[in-house]
Structure formats: structure tokens, C-alpha cells
Length: 125
Image 1 (cartoon, rainbow, N blue to C red):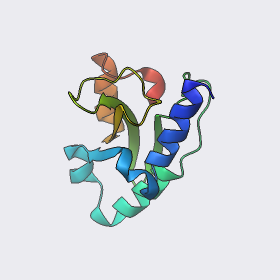
Image 2: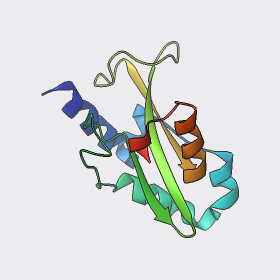
Image 3: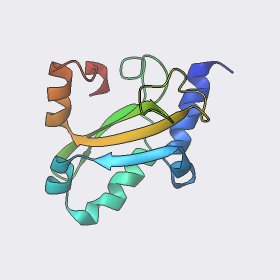
Image 4: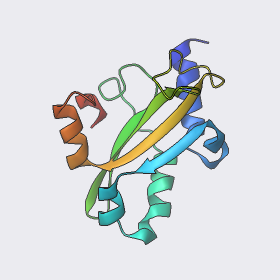
């Protein structure tokens, strides 16, 4: 199995309850302030079930980011890969023994600012 395929499978698992041991989820303060609390379970389900990956929005075939509408807001999520020890970027996201995943949920406006600063790629929107 290629590394991208293995990474994609781990990312799919991580987005579900069964994969919570692979990392953690974080919501930006904008999400906390603008998305009503009662929509959070729906938000998590939409991320867990997300399947709209294409060559344009997922060029590495890792299934590590997506976007969708939730109520009045456009939600963007992405998964970053960190080393388990130093919290630096990992050198092998396909190895769960070496990698901790961090799923960040944000509003589209926040994601656009990250694209402008180079911290996020445009295809992740």
C-alpha cells in the first residue's frame, strides 16, 4: 500500500469516533462564537462522513481537508500532522506510531487569511 493510501485511510478513521486515539480536534474561537452549540454534533458528523474529495481539492490523495455549509456558515477543516514527541511536523503521516493528527475546524474567512499568509493551500478551501 502506498503512503498516500495509508495516510488517507488513517485520516478517514481519525475523523470518526473510532479514530479519536490518533489525535485531537480543535475549533477556532470564531467557530465557537458563530456556530450554535446545538450544531456541533452535526458539524462533527459532516466531517466524519465527508467524501467530496477530488483531484482539485485533494491533490495528494490524503483526504486531509474539506469544506461545507452548516447553517449560515461555511466551514473549513484540515488535518495537520505532528511528531508525537516534539509537536513538530512529522516526517511520515502514514505511520500512526510516529504521528499525532490535529484536525482544525474554522470558518472560511479564517481559512482565506491562512491562504494569504501561506499557512494553508488554496485547494483546501
